[in-house]
Length: 254
Image (cartoon, rainbow, N blue to C red; front, side, top):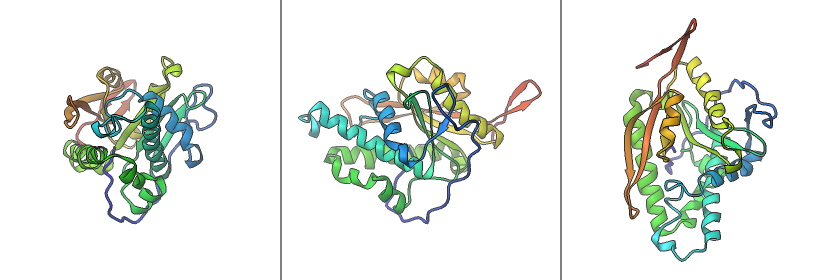
């Protein structure tokens, strides 16, 4: 996830995307979502990340241990609704499969959620009072700065010129159908055409193996340290691939 700061930045218009197929997603075709569908997309992600240590890092805190499972679920869902709406405003939100079976949130080159207007419209500002004291510290003081600083360190001069896969998740009943691959390749094809790298953080120990098959490589490991046990994230980068005849050539260091 990109850093969210209170700085006021003039809104810019997101770049136009080149849909491969943006019609119905019930038969395996990719669909780009607008703000009117953010709740369905966020629900998919909330279900996909219900037991994820990173997604729950600001929810499952010692000062909320007496909260009911429903109260924690509601907060977990709210966080993902705010993040999804912000990406509908400034990024690229795609889905495939019936009933938002799989959803991806991408932040395109040159875009972010830092502007004051985006913070207000997305609802992210509400987390300052919805999260507990420990949750606020984890989310705003540790989690977001760590992701922001790591991305800048890893990508260097390309930090603002790369595609950022912020979230991708599949509902339990939609898994095993290749939906995640479809959504990732939908955007990596655009990145390749633009000679741009793609960046992500993986919070699941199994996922780097899957991402590696799609061209991503682990470049760094980072840790969230305020929980009882450190929470690991694998930082991965996919360099742009250019087709030369029938050969795929990796273009490095652009």
